[in-house]
Image (tube, rainbow, N blue to C red; front, side, top):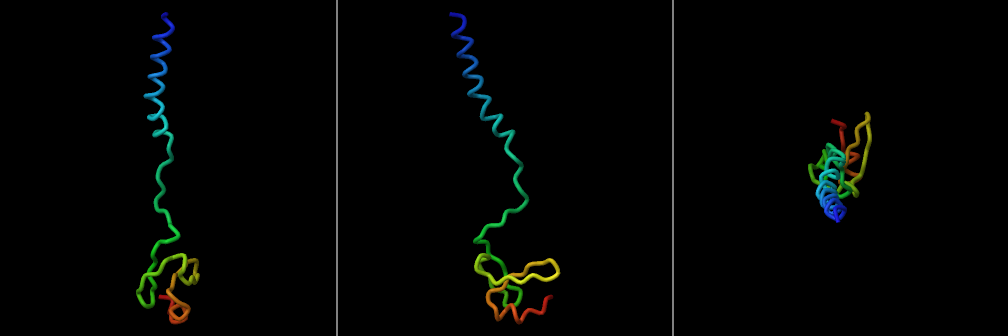
Length: 78
């Protein structure tokens, strides 16, 4: 008979502490996530384009996004 209250106490304690322990173990949020449907600004015509559909150009270790091949050709690199 003494075992039943002790067992019940342990079950309640674990049920209350388990969510707290899960929150502590979660990794810290990352600084910035990139999403495939993120909007990026074209440096030539100043329009916004969906990143997954943008024309990409890399120079000097930097990726630039353009709305079209024509804007990519007009880019002065500034």
